[in-house]
Image 1 (tube, rainbow, N blue to C red):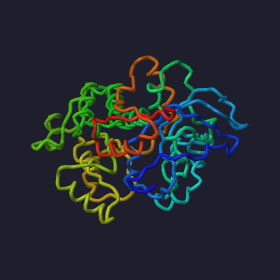
Image 2 (image 1 turned 90 degrees about the vertical axis):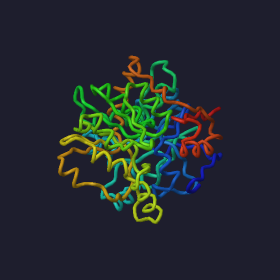
Image 3 (image 1 turned 180 degrees about the horizontal axis):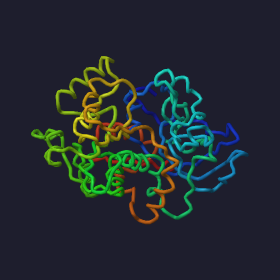
Length: 386
């Protein structure tokens, strides 16, 4: 309903619009860290009445005549990116770059040059699709997106296949980790947690996790990470990383924070002033640190969302050190099934990050808790029918 204003309302149920649609009765959904970029007004083209949310799963209620892979009663997890399966980019497995699922592609092209795929609940610039923090959702291209869950795994173990587990895994994969490598991860929120876990899955010898919140740092340590609390008075992140790597720097750096980075240094004050007067759209403190910290020839992976224009990014350092940078929305469809298999094989239980279980009526207040990192919050899951 506006910046910092979320309401729970009764609205008409979604209906089939196209023959490839499905209607999902949502059984679990969640508030994502990137929802806060909408809540805080950093992503443009939101409109009053837009339904939030892009992490959801549920039961198929109805399908269009062209949906052949799903039937009423199937239990599915829905990826946050919407892909057609037939365009050039989908055929290249670049599902998040789909050419056919953003009806407002012209808005993205004006800002970014080209449009990516449509996204659930994430602005009209990215399609204007109603999100999943609701009791029902319309899922377009249902032949391509939803993953059927045919085991009796509880919802909370598989819900995060909708976004943050694949996002963390892709971040680790993009980091080009070799066996025994040292990986630094900025941000121990949900995506950071799964990036840490995935880095170990891919053979990292050591992961250094950087955050300021005790509850998040504790979760990172539970995974085996070494932690750095950047808020401590005598802690300089770049110095700490040099000390921990013998002066060489991490082999890979993962920015799991994105455009609302925090810093206790002067650059943090600089970014807040610049964004307040609209001379900068994003606060790229973590990206700056990652570029400066990475060893020569290393890889910087960026799963954290950036929305616009950045200031004072040390690109000369990136060039001078010959680093690789990989980033972007998650190509969900490539990861959901393999990661489901890891869950089924008890290699990971993604539900460990959940701290709060709420109803839809509680969601507006919990957005504030999530933004302000109160109540030791690490992840919020919503039961729409409670």
